[in-house]
Amino acid sequence: MDKLPGVGLLTPLDLNTVEAVPESHVWPHLDESSQKFESDKTVSIPVVDFNDDNVLELIGKACEEWGMFQLINHGIPKTLTVETEEVARQLFALPQSQKMKALNVPGTANGYCMARLTKHHDKMMWHEGFTVIGSPVDDFKKLWPSDYQPLCDKMEEYQLKMKDLADKLISLIFKFLGISDEEMVKKLSYIDPATGKPHLALRLNSFPACPEPSKVIGLAAHTDTSLFTMLHQARREGLQILNEKDGWLPLAPRSDALIINVGDFLQIISNGRFHSVPHRVMIRETEKTTMSMAYFFHPPGHLHVAPYCKPLSETLQTPIYKGVNVKEYFVIKAKASGKGIAAITI
Image (cartoon, rainbow, N blue to C red; front, side, top):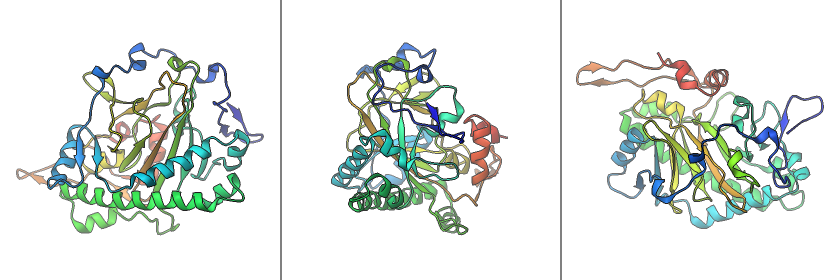
């Protein structure tokens, strides 16, 4: 862990070259069970077939009961996913000095970065990331000066397909919640009129092989600050969710599915019917680097998000959360060390 000269910005450590876990990355008090991945203790979250005639009810029920589900027959071509994943592999395989040329800087979202959760913790995570919003051409030019365009095209094609799917999913989710078409259009305005920039982000995650995986965490426990997140996992195990009764449970995702999880803003809008589930990533005993690609669907920063309450059994629902400006919520959550929902609960 280093700091850029004259800047208070932490920069990623080259995890691919360390022979022992540095103290900055050692997490104390990790329970032994968190590192175990017995097949009989993994949990399979609901599987929803996007072609099912009852897809609306299946998605709504999964969001209510789990806050997360696996989506199959989602329409994202397997070849496109594999090719986009290969671009990400090439990116993370670059020398550290080359990746640093596209380092994310304060005030921007794009580029090479550490886990965004780092600011909430005293320890660092065994992770390196790269955020893409729209075209990555400016950053990719720095990484591959002579042959960046085909890689940009692939990344943009993947984002376009994911956005189309996200639009369909949020329409179904809002319909399940009884939100009108007029209100839905407002909340689906993913372009900020002030900046003209989209509020959709693709986060590429790399979890390098670790010499002492029992001492580290890939991504610390958190909830997503989004409407929902669509996750492609190139790894079979490592992702865990927090269950109130049983504690941390390892997931057993299907290789042909996208994991869809409810984010904080959807929990607020649903007035608690849907829950933004705490989750984390643990590092397995492996000699291989593993990856994931997360697509975040955000409401634009200028919007005011509040619980949508409608009459149920002739009784008006009472909001359990304060309404909040989207941009302000990010600040509130940061000040509350990641506990954003608790900070706005009435």
